[in-house]
Image 1 (cartoon, rainbow, N blue to C red):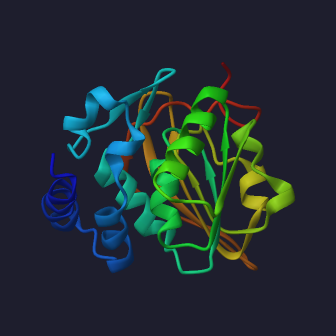
Image 2: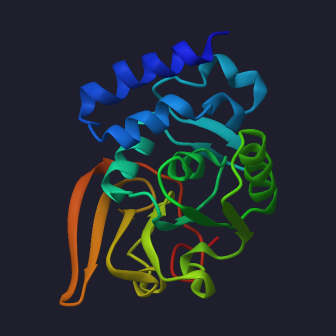
Length: 213
């Protein structure tokens, strides 16, 4: 199976025509082997234009949505990034292709272990994953240049905003359990601004500052 060609086609047909223009993001999606982050039996669908199940009632996001979130995160080499919801590890791998160091909080132990193993198999080492309540962030490792949340919250968790540096960006789906608005928050010394990006559907962000079980 020619996964390299499949990645090139994914970038050319799914990402670029939809407004993904950041060269760093496009290069990352060309490089990261998405097929290593999904169940082997789904390899034929690894670069398809839709989410895929990864177990524990969780999914790996559609490539376009992952790219859109990454582009709005506005990554730069050397950035310190926090991800909430490691899932398969794929989004973290995309981040690691651009940023300097990344941390991830995953609520489900089996997914945290699987993501860590997949990332190491793919050659990534500049990351740390812990099991915990992602709505509380990872305060002892902050502050962060950017935070990305790969699950939907009823409102932006205060803990995450507090752990952002001034000038930092937070990308998060906000809304109800079944539909949300992907939203970009920027933290400045004068306050926090927000930009609504698009409608989306993510699994719920479960935790003290998110949804209940």
